[in-house]
Image (tube, rainbow, N blue to C red; front, side, top):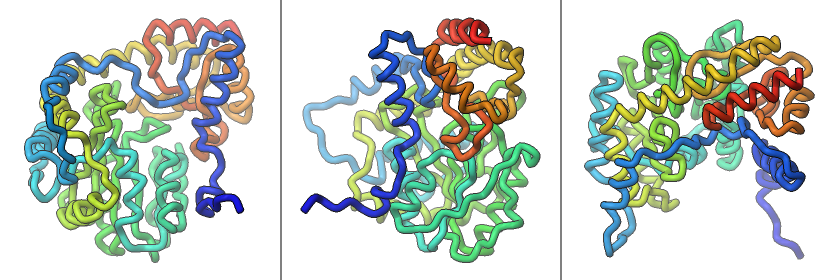
Length: 373
């Protein structure tokens, strides 16, 4: 008798970006030079002062890290939230460090009651996969360009919903959410008893106007859990360091849950994270580098009739490519330019371009795309 898989795992299709990796492997084997805009993985160098802080924190003894995180890290996160968003967080009751944000996002549905998790579409695939592995049903909330890529919360049947996921600045569209939208979502969460989970991984990447706001800025943070990470802000994807902040009851529940699954950042990573959260100069440099990439590529795409249909935040371009989007992505792929079709996120007709290659590679990709016509 062969081993039996979880029916959830058995029923899942291949994770979309695994399909891209398979395509990349085929192209490499054929000797094709690849410029990869598919995966949203930062490829910027982690600043030296962060690496130095990590190295200095490595000690002869390496005890298990506490699931609640170092007090100094919780304080650094609260201090950053105060400077960035003008909010006061109690580092002991309203903040918990996490192993990046992906694992915390995936696990959230295990912690709270409710048979349904409401998930925007298009969206990051981990929201619904976490829900399914927790035995919950997924309620898709369509995001439409005509509504600024915000879900219509007034048409939702909230009965049975335990978690509502929001993600702004949004992956894949780059859209932002206004404070009044967060206030409305939070009021619904309090009325119907669900958790409002706000994934803000891209809050520090934007190209125009004022910085994006946070759901932490709403007047009443009960029922609210905000997720953020150093992966994008500080070019630290492999360090796996993030946090959840918000309602003390939610943080307390996570403190009870997380020791059972053994997820906590290593102490020397937490020391590096303290350094990262307390410096803004390197974040400004990161933003400018992504701006240079955007300016190297976007004019060519627009000249070819691909409309930038998204917002001005994140490091993604969200392009309206019409019914030929999949074919266009396949054509670029064979030329070595990898992008993610919108169908990966539940939105056929669009392309997502992750501005993660260096600026010179973005310029080279623009030349290749122009040559393809």
